[in-house]
Length: 368
Ligand SMILES: *Cc1c(COP(=O)(O)O)cnc(C)c1O
Image 1: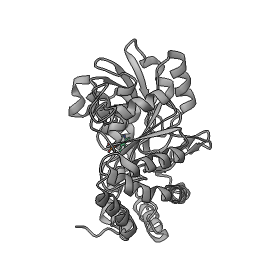
Image 2 (image 1 turned 90 degrees about the vertical axis):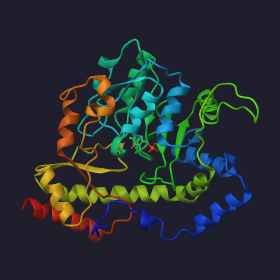
Image 3 (image 1 turned 30 degrees about the vertical axis):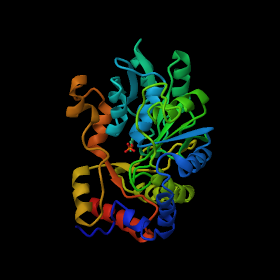
Image 4 (image 1 turned 60 degrees about the vertical axis):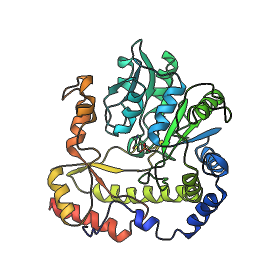
């Protein structure tokens, strides 16, 4: 394995001392309380209070958070769901699993859905709008919610990258009928396997989601709808209960790291930083900028021991798995352009000042 000076994954660092977590997990194991149970209840309470919704429902992944949300509002085969062209495959996975069709809109400089392009995509079959808080940035939710109201089309937020991000001081996951979060090991709030959470203020949707995630069961022997096996694993809820108290501080650290990069990269004319809007709290799940000679810069940084990434190098809408949608290159020009020009630098809470400085110095050296 390559020895990185600035690695991308911080998990070995994060989980160096885990005795307190193991202790809590051990208790669950020894109690045999493996499905749903007390740890999950506690976690859901903590999560809803962190985000600021009445309810939270733990499910087994961020993808399922999206799928179950769509199912809860009645999305079915043939329906259309409007979403961003630039996102992780999981966003469309949730849509397609229900037989619905993802309808893409291009993004803005901030990598998120261009709200001004949404209305033109609405048809009789449009049954949901699914904005993605990509990189930890919240798109213009005021505009998206007003379109939602005008056409009576519900909004489901893919907030998998956006825990504690906000627009106009209102948190991601509190705007739509539901907000979908991921607890994947590489997300800002992570657990030791897959996991997801749905937030909502709607009691009916909350109750529906609780049914859907557990086979539609109302008790041991009776089910009222057919659902899924998509409970958040109780052991992972216990892990989440140990880690959730750190989210606010780690978010602040990420923001502070990003501010440092912004200041320094701002001095390099070959690097373009997307406009940072005042009323938008970006939590920097990813730190992505546009770079001249991107491919060479990437190679240079990798050689120097900085594990940069591209999120993502291949346009989602041109992937083989979505060929049936019959898109062609150029359908989403901003997304295309971004694929070729973006680069992601490690921005996590465990980076030292020395590492951040080294990243900046390396990029400066490349352009000199
Ligand atoms: C991670 C992620 C998901 C899905 O999360 P999983 O928990 O891995 O299923 C969905 N959408 C986006 C934008 C993501 O980054």
